[in-house]
Length: 353
Ligand code: SAH
Picture (cartoon, rainbow, N blue to C red):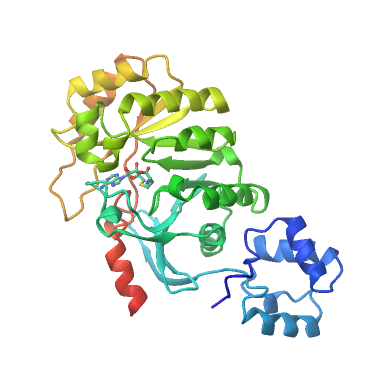
């Protein structure tokens, strides 16, 4: 295992890598080679980098055992392909922890659904990840690694990234923001193709807005009023819905980017016409887009997915009020790779095996 004083190379910029290479007594141009091998060629160890002098490779490989020059790649512990070609990966980190990543291909896109934490502390009632509790934040390189892993496995460039795997990204803002920058600058994925999804925590959206990222912010709203939201999302008790909308409106001003609101549809709970009206009222004149997500069943709770006529009824009610809205059926349902189905306990068993 790497020692904690040596930062992994994955996540470092070209100039940081060049500095590191120079500190190892090598010419600066080897920094560019290192950058290319880590981000484009997917080198997992310095020993893989055949353009480096053999003697130096041997030296650095030895040092890497103590953490110096550790690149920071994970291992695929398990891979499951769903009927719709979505691939779910369980990735083993250097400390043995397991996280889940999902690769979602379409003809034009390859989207990676990345995790930002091992587990999640938010305990949303409808979400499998929340049922397993929280273990730790992911480091920057552990987030980037997920994208490179999917890219390599599909042998295809990743075009889009969504932070909709395990965890609450804004509770790990520092590493998530560093990963977004590196995925943009080092891996070459447009910031506008990166979506950070959050349940919303007081002050966090405002602080993210100050960074003026061009990434898309998605807010998991799931309810049109405060009591209903608190019932589904315990942390909402500390965050009045009006305050959440204030921060969101301010975010649009700060960044010039519209916000996506995720609205989970739970049959006969939050999917009545009056909820659509209430939601439309909140969003009147707001640069936003609503994504309706029909609930994906998890065993711990007995919520139900509304049938398709209720889903389209809810959608139509929003459209009638001039709200931009789409329905997002999750992919990968048959291998538990869909939204909200990423479960920590299963992963832990695997980690201990
Ligand atoms: N913590 C972040 C990101 C992870 S969840 C957030 O809350 O946004 C990604 C999305 O999946 C969120 O919108 C989440 O509410 C949704 N989700 C959780 N459980 C779900 C379920 N059982 N069915 C459908 N979507 C679910």
